[in-house]
Image (cartoon, rainbow, N blue to C red; front, side):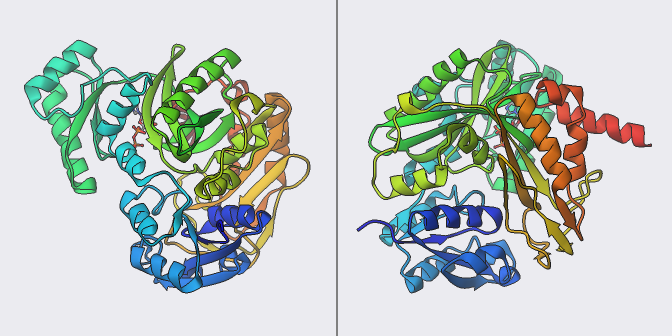
Length: 452
Ligand code: ADP
């Protein structure tokens, strides 16, 4: 019969994003929410809403039993997890499928494989993706680590197999520091993930972060939707993303895109995925795969004209991919600014009541946000409150429109990162696209120094 009612196991802008795609397809939605989110926009717009617990995410948005019960009570026949929360939780995906509810995401076995970084790297290598030189899997013995490090050359990076968010990772500049730094990384990993399995990688000095969007139908067909450049990062958190990357040629896009799509076809991958690479001196190096929709997916939507959430729902419903690779056209340029409720200088979170809200508009301007005047941003969750996505026929046109649109956004009552984005748009390196994953941190450090 097909999917007719989707439970959205998330909150904020992404819950709204999924609701909108569902409604356009004639599908009803069920919002779930914590007690802190009773007044949230995703709850107001959904066809049905179920309170699943107290503010703490562990007891609400991460609560398997409460979410499955909400789906059963409301008769939802599919669950979309969004990003974060349960989106990369293979066990939850298993439970959803065991209840005969369609999981709008990859096969649980693929979530599991890609969630373990050692396993993911092995799989990626076997599928033909270029890897960062490093140890062949996990290493636990210091003599072996020294041998591997000597072979790939210092500096090396010690990484935790279960790592995430940049934790459990240490740069090792030379052999005499190897043992102590690896032990530190192990302690960090043990505390954060309960697992201190480590592996070693060549440390790339100044790469860009380039990721490819992929889709598979789960039956051996896959496509790529080009790349996104997310090199502007603070503490491994993306701040500003664009597509296409200012440094990737059409030839490289189609060559690497072909490699990633082929890899996904080989594994019969299902749904949306992102393959992340570091890019240095013209070479791509696989770092990880995210088996879900990404925050920055709208820049890909802008340059391809495709609705990625619609595509996810179609695939979960057993349909074929809606397009063939040769039909996908990349046109123009798109940039996304993540707007957080935080101090633009200290980055301290700034939750609170929105006194006044005016959203930017006009041609090729998209704002994905659950904000409204009178809404109170709860202090319990991620500080991202809006995404501003702007499209232009050229990168220059896109930047000019972005500057105009940022100037129109009014969010009163809390501090936001809008002034930071406005400042970034005055930097010659940002304007020319001349930045790597180090750029933002270095610029922020310089800015802080000039302040004092
Ligand atoms: P996590 O899952 O913790 O986010 P990743 O493997 O995605 O871990 O790495 C996080 C970030 O660390 C990357 O975005 C990049 O900035 C940096 N990084 C990872 N591997 C390397 C490497 N081999 N050389 C240099 N930087 C790296």
